Length: 99
Image (cartoon, rainbow, N blue to C red; front, side, top):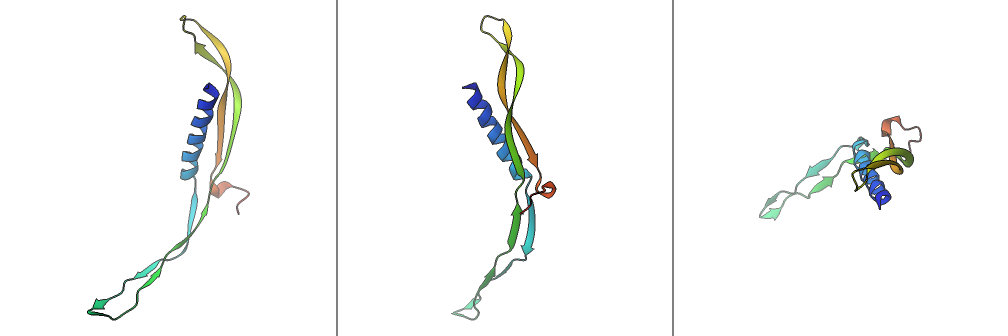
């Protein structure tokens, strides 16, 4: 049960960090020309949306063993080894394997 909670917390953290580390490059300007009407149509509309290339960051999620103090119900505590998520994020601009 504890392991699942830690893994889920790690995945949520990695997902939120991944969104921040994106490298976005605008590759084309956008253009919108609306049609003009005066009882009858005098001009056709023209829509040209901008294009973007997005390079996502590289995210490595692994686990590591750490010894932590865990309280017991009888007001004593003992050290237990638990598995904690380990997240490494390499921003898109620092990645060596850019596509």
